[in-house]
Image 1: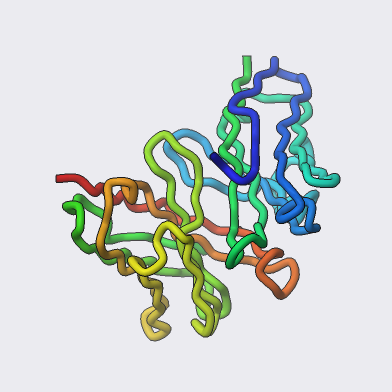
Image 2: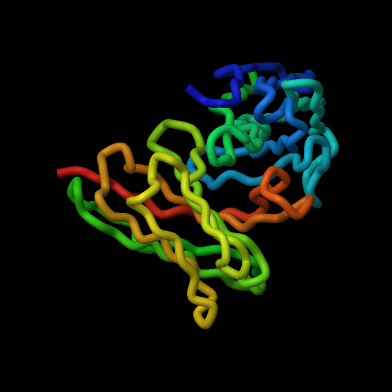
Length: 112
Length: 124
């Protein structure tokens, strides 16, 4: 059971918009800690997609965007493309016990 | 090219030990916190351990505390993860990751550069 909860899968047709939610609590996202998103293609290492809630690293298309509100965050992908088919993970920090960096369980995006 | 390269993975029996290495190139790793994140087969990502740029602070997930030790050799631009008392549940690909800080303290760190990973299999 992950500290951050994501849907196990989402899907969309090419050109559509999809969103992936990441639900936490008052000890992580709700505490104001940043949320980051990672993309992982099969057999590859993860790469950062969104950092600090809504910032795009250099080279990431602006079809990707992030937001945070309360104890949740979302990743939105517009103009869906075949190459977007991958696993997506949210990540934040949790202040319970000694503190820890935590990930969501991951969401498999299928492009129909 | 800026990259991290892990090595040292392999098959080890339960209760055994293994040392992973992470070699940095294309940047001065001593200026950054470096972490280990693992991924069990078919599963999600899990933070394992980390150390600050000067090695003054180290961090461990509860699942590995007391069994794993992180260290750095600045002369070799290399990071290590010494793993002992290994269990079947430690089986995973172990990624070495570089940290970037949006602010100076832990809740605002993220993983901006990942190595390709090294597979550790704990089995008899």
